[in-house]
Image 1 (tube, one colour):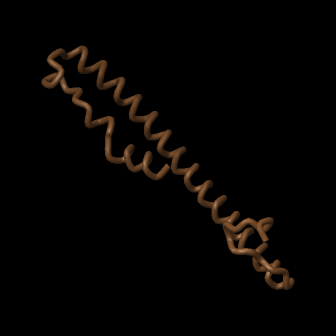
Image 2: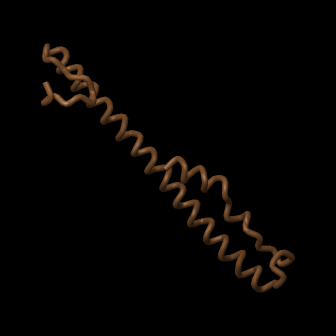
Image 3: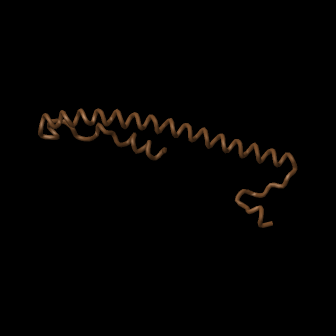
Length: 92
């Protein structure tokens, strides 16, 4: 998400040439300008949604990490042996 949002912030729809002098045709430039304006609104809305998704994913990651930490602490306090992360408890 971070990479996509960074790319969207670096590459602006408005950077696409759309002036009459650049296009060479007034009506085409006007039509392209209208299209780019609508496209920019769409990209802005998608970026806003992406930021919300990123925020919610971060909250979820933090909640899972806290739950795992709490569960680990509970097991440690109960005196049960805890294997190191990544080890196969069935291998012992």
